[in-house]
Length: 466
Image (cartoon, rainbow, N blue to C red; front, side, top):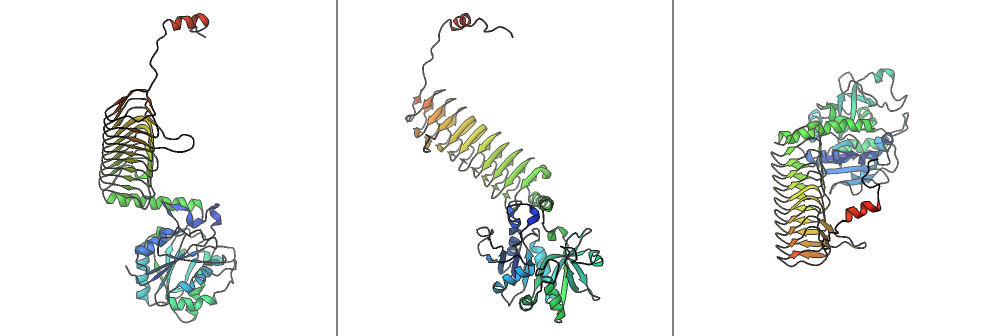
């Protein structure tokens, strides 16, 4: 991988065919905005400098990785206008690789292969091409008698290309490498003599040839690496390709993906060896899963961490942490700030938010634990509720170690339950419980003899069939 190049990513397009208020380059592809795919590819290929051309509204501000430069294309006047807008940021002493923000699957290997072909060919510019059965609206590559690139014919609007040129199946992928000095010399000479009256970057190739320079072409071995996104149909098609490759990468690294067709794993997710991803499972965002864990089926995990050997089944996790050996679900909901200690348990129909369960603590079923700290080896019985909100502010509950809370206990925050304490079933606890004590906070049972008989006398229809 060479670091002697500048990467220029064109990401100022309007993307009107997406039919969206969201700029095209910000649409998600497996957990990463479209425009960031070529940015990451350039960085992984070792680019010394990455420059991104943005639209005037600057939707990419705050999205780009640290160290990436951003310039603005003031008017939407085509790919040539985009490169011209970035001219002052281009270092003249090293090659410039031009990438498109809507061509996401270009790989570091493809970029390096293009640079190698360019260096070997001794050309002023080298373009990446591929051959498609249906070239659609892609620009066609016209070659001369020697096989070099003569020009690229755009086909975006009627009149851009002749009928004969439309028969060409070799297309321009929108990926180029230029000698920077030569590119900077011809950029001011680009013209708008086309149907859309825009500055087309491929015209720079013609100008270089007219000045006596040679323009080469390097055919991409991976056709998917050069396919662009113009609408949501194409985005879905490339998402299927990207997802298959992500899943295969994990499987080849030792992850068991039971049903790859129903496993949705974002590009930046990490998964340890011997972990099993069950069907209908989504691992999204910055999620990290350790080794030997089981996740799924029917589980969504967003920006969360799951430790070695943990089990998460039929659950929804967002910004949560599950430590080694813990179990979650089925039908559990871990909200932001939920942290489960080693070998702890959040069971069936349990919701936990902004709370910590200590080592081997258990909340087996039908409970809500919010804004609480639960000590190690405590067990909160079914229907335990932390009443954390007084209508104005949230308050915190503290449960000590080895606490046994009876079923249907409500802990009214702020309240503290000491180590080794107990609560009786059905208790509403609104005062601190000392260590080792039993808290009984419920009305005494009263049995009213003969109530059923007297009730039937008052209501003769009671118990009769309809």
